[in-house]
Length: 349
Image (cartoon, rainbow, N blue to C red; front, top):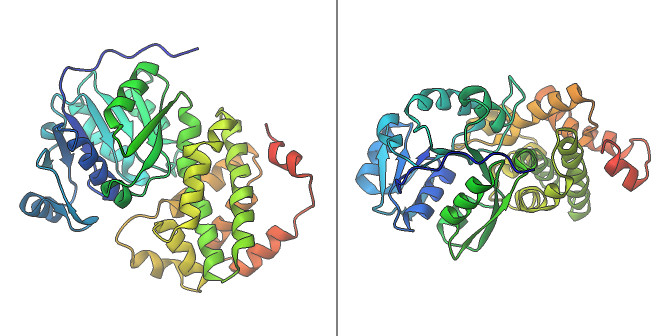
């Protein structure tokens, strides 16, 4: 049964993007190239000044000239005034704080779109849960997720993603808004599944990065991706997601991309861990956020609370937070009780 349609969005053509990281900037550029005015909210004062002068995001998306349709703002009222759609493209650990600052400026009928991939650590909520607590259960909400590196989107490489909303009209409106000849958007009703797929894949990308750093070859990576998908599906079903979502773009698609490419920040964290570098040193040397580090803790705690078996998530968590040696983590995973594959895959369905 489809949820009650939200109020019609304003006639305004303006879209606001909150967050000028690589993904927020790439989405702003995609929308602006459709001759649509886009207001990009920028947190960092130095970056704001640089964007106004150069119209290039030298910090997060260097080398990409940005459209004249994009304006830059540090004031939420300026950024959100009369906006029909507001895209939240900030890291998950600041999502709630930024939303609290922005919500009094958010037009009543605006659709909020999350482009954030993570789970809040303190509450163990997805971004939809955070939005429901802050804006109320009737706020029009959607999530955009799928296999999509920001630079490749900015370079107009063919990309396919999913936009999910419990409001079918909102999903279709956003599908038309974001779709271009190089950016194909599918719709879904399964907000939970799409959000979990986008968050969980980062944990497994750290895992495959560790394997790469240890020079363990292709076999273990294929095993980790496959069994990681089973863990994603188990948790998703436990939280009410459709298991088929995990076989789609926001699940398997994003999982494969992030677990096999050195462009992935989470893969890079794992790679350096596998090479023996300490986590604090790795994170200190990173300019951008690797969501999987924080998400691994949130998902580990959530799985413990719900009684969902997620051994790979547990291994990554213990490596990151308890100093477990990767070689020992692999030994523990490989020596677990032998099981039937289909039973192991569906044991909590």
